[in-house]
Length: 72
Image (cartoon, rainbow, N blue to C red):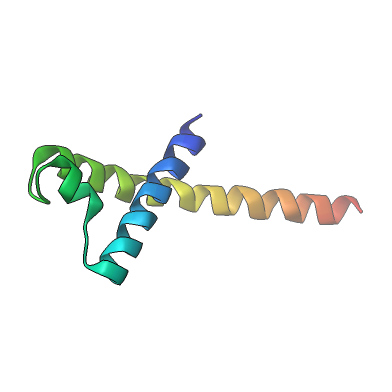
């Protein structure tokens, strides 16, 4: 469940960065009252923590693929 929550926040963060890069529009800041608002900052922190958590998913996937390769 935690993996899915982390992936959700990464999708939100990725979409937000895409909008910032393409249109200079920060959706999170717009939706929650500016980039300095408490809710926006919490979302930014959750996106960052999700990115750190998803690093572990990369290694889990790599280990599963390596284990599968050894079985064959």
